[in-house]
Image (tube, rainbow, N blue to C red; front, side, top):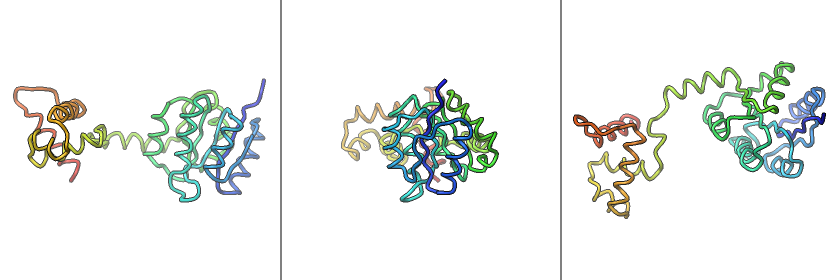
Length: 219
């Protein structure tokens, strides 16, 4: 039985070397270990690993380079499992990673790496196709879902249309402001109603209800 191949991306030399040693002792074959997202993606293209382990924040800005690279791997190499390591729970990144394809993916806090057995078990599970989320990540995602902005489902254009509706403009005025046809505005308005779960009723004016949701969430 062949060993699972891994490419690592971690800018901290100490943690990177620790991961190499830990994964090697766990029976994995580390094909490459990189200090930045760009070289990581090059290594993934070259080695086509079974699994990647990558830090959320990587050089040069230490913001989202790591998670963006992980999403590229998910898209370009769908058979490659992805484990993301983070110092803190970053709900948006975790949600985006899992939403991209909820199989063969893990989002773990770096504190978990200290428990080597738990970490290796999680990595093996992800490599086998499971989804492994740190318990704290799950908690934060649940909180996020309870407070999710109902307008998040709207496209940028639909939000523009809704903002103009909130200004009291009719479809003709919105069409003139956005330089589109009234027919296009009508389609956007219908889509807004559908995404905000505003079904046709006799007693409620959907246009008013949509504007109220916009004002409530924009305040």
